[in-house]
Image 1 (cartoon, rainbow, N blue to C red):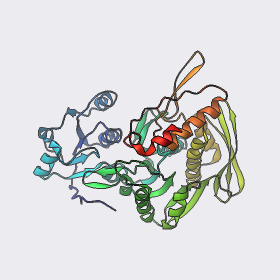
Image 2: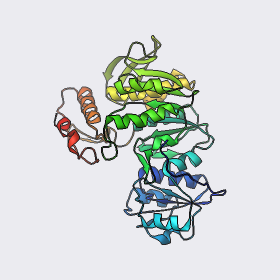
Image 3: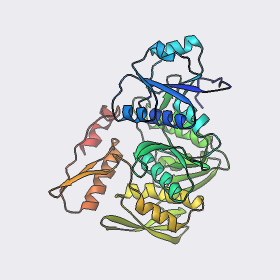
Image 4: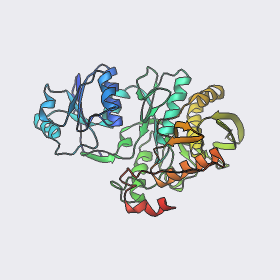
Length: 391
């Protein structure tokens, strides 16, 4: 595990300060810590709605800009966001004062996930949708889950929740952790159940090539507890290569005849997609969902397998699927006027963009599809994917 900062956790933590608090995950962590009873403060360079309003509503003070005096009074612990550089004024002051500090995933593991069993959803694609459905399913099953996810789960109106149940659902990001720890965030978690959706080259600003990406996922699989369960998508050649590294139990899902969980017959029955699930060669149940596209059916299939592992019955799973409203900015219908449907989607990797367009075409039949793409990520603005986008 490439952690380069050993934390001397303070005996008593009352006040936690977060540097770069307005990020999606950092803001959610701040709110979780507040709900757990900590005094929480934060700072960021760019403070604007909706995150500024969200944090203010929780009673969390936010300082604009980065200044040493934001650490007065001294916090017991500082959480450093992954976009924060080592020469940040608050980092310099934090180190000069000898304050204990950690990364976002370390804080999540230490506080939000303390005493809970972790369900980690990781992979290049589908993390947010899969994790969101699992959280919603556990909620529908009255298991009162906690979660921290990289998107707003529509049914909850939030990307985090602090529940009293035994389980926490976490999105395991392969992006780097902090300036003092260049390894992926997911290495800080200890899954009892892990879902691996796909492994492709992405995040060209921190990964050299696909082999470099595989190294990170290999570390995750090697480090799993032998008693843990890994649910792995069966249509990914890289995942197939990596499976032998996992010491725990493995169950595959997707479309292979020999996979314990696979999709059967699929039909579009607007506004639903109806799909059959086969478990160990036998019909398990036929479900309906408002999610569209084969990629989303695979995301939901992973959640169904997790639910069955937790002894949630098909009737409850079916109710959760029908009531699951998805995630904001994941095929979110923003409006309909004069027969024109406007859909907002976060897809940026070429594979995800292609899957989203194919899903919309299949669901809406003969209607014309116009796709407007904003290259907003580091990878999408580099030459490496340009020819694929053009296709």
